[in-house]
Image (tube, rainbow, N blue to C red; front, top):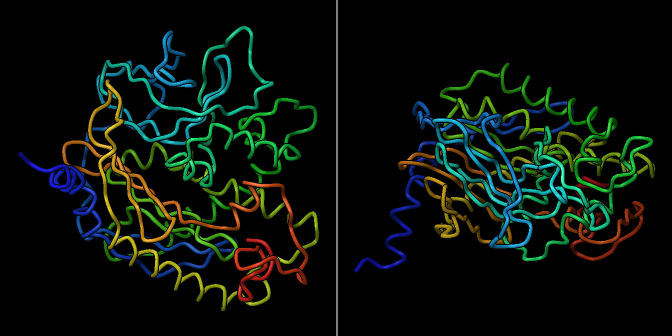
Length: 365
């Protein structure tokens, strides 16, 4: 019989085949960050998967396999991609979908989710679910891949309550994500990214990008189907820039320098090196089929493990890549969002993983 490893190689080959036709483009320096286009030498596949989320209906299972699971019904006649990190407002308690899933036409899938509000936000009378405009921040989407703790999102929420709009009392991811001040900053970032990608000619088709904000890589994303990319890009970019906005505003309040302002050329060169290292590690990554893909889903979900604590996720159907994402490990984000916020002064030094530990990236990313 065929070994598990051989079957994994066969079922994950669509990710490696797609990556083999993609190269890094020239880094583009934006006003607020660095964008590295990822360019395919071949025309992207048409997968038949839809990225429009309006055809999905959400409910709480009567007998959930795991606490906080959500039932997702696809009311359309085509498979629909539900992005990992999607935030659902409603039910007895808000949820954050843990992993990207392609829901089959006319089917119901029970997907894993985390609570996206603190325990005190439990509703005695559940309300219908509605999708938030933004997916959750990169930090949380990366954590969802391997952490077993359902308190990860609640901890993040407690560190960012101050960003809620005046008069908003809900302690939830959606309440923070709806912050006017965060939205203003993330919209600037999103417009800057889209403008740079649109204005810069490239030899080939841009199918994704790496993004660095304030000197540190935040994400690597590839869309195998460009129609799905168009339908999800805005939602994805809002989530990608979310955490960067929060860190920037925390630093601004405490009058802390931001990296790149004093020596943008040096920061730019450091980002280029980091991007090259990440791309090299991706070529040596380990790929494994996620066998927890629920009933009612189609295609394969693939887990990606790089040589360090950086992880990634891919989804595909019929041997074609639909979406691929890598969450670069960032000890800075872990310090800020996984423990009590402490933004040190420029003179402090808290060890080799401290915010201030990298002399070439002073300040907070």
